[in-house]
Length: 255
Ligand SMILES: NC(=O)c1ccc[n+]([C@@H]2O[C@H](COP(=O)([O-])OP(=O)(O)OC[C@H]3O[C@@H](n4cnc5c(N)ncnc54)[C@H](O)[C@@H]3O)[C@@H](O)[C@H]2O)c1
Image (tube, rainbow, N blue to C red; front, side):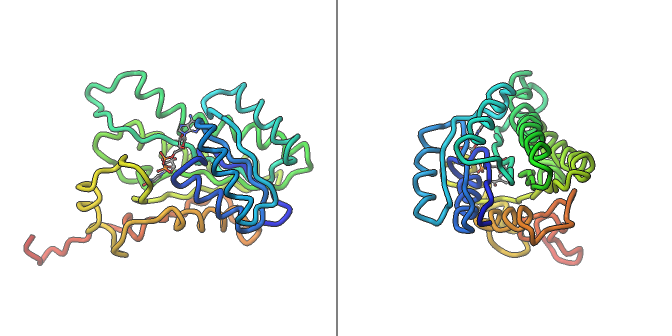
């Protein structure tokens, strides 16, 4: 990743932070972008000590087209034209469909689906102007393939992101820009966004027997972003300890 410049959205904490750290350890320069500028700045500061060729923080709301374009222009000036983009920023509130407010639906779709399009556009226009090449990794979810009660907007946004990944791969391939997605299962992140009960009940559905860690996802993202993955585009890599493989119930067992 030496000589590479990576932009990571939603990089102030959780998976985004781990992805930014993984790029830093590989020697890339990293643009740490997030709604929360203060937390992003703290992450950027820590990356330099990990080996990043450079690290800067930007306040970025992926839902805001003009803001996205302005930040990419600033990144160009400060770090250079980005080679890699990770569309990680995402939200996952619980809102049952029966009485989901329009604003709740819009907030999730705008962040998780429109955001990757807007960032992708600003990224790809610059890659094409620079002569092509580059790589996008979209952070989808196993929720793209397996419905979760209370998360209709989230599941739809991630299913949409999987198809957007394929459409981007199709349109950007002629410019040698690869576009792939990771689909993480349940991953342990700081904070209380997922209850202990939910985690306990989820665990038996993971054949590998543990909940994922942000670094599990970060390794898959850096692989897909790297030249090691040349000729891989339009792919979705699940990082879920086998959760999506099927039901862990034997018909003959009494349950
Ligand atoms: N944690 C999991 O179990 C899990 C599983 C599958 C997929 N994912 C996906 O991984 C991504 C990161 O999830 P996480 O668990 O690390 O979440 P998180 O809440 O810990 O971190 C998300 C970050 O995104 C930022 N953000 C939110 N809205 C934004 C916006 N409009 N513009 C810019 N930044 C914004 C937040 O400020 C936060 O720093 C999301 O896309 C999520 O859907 C997470």
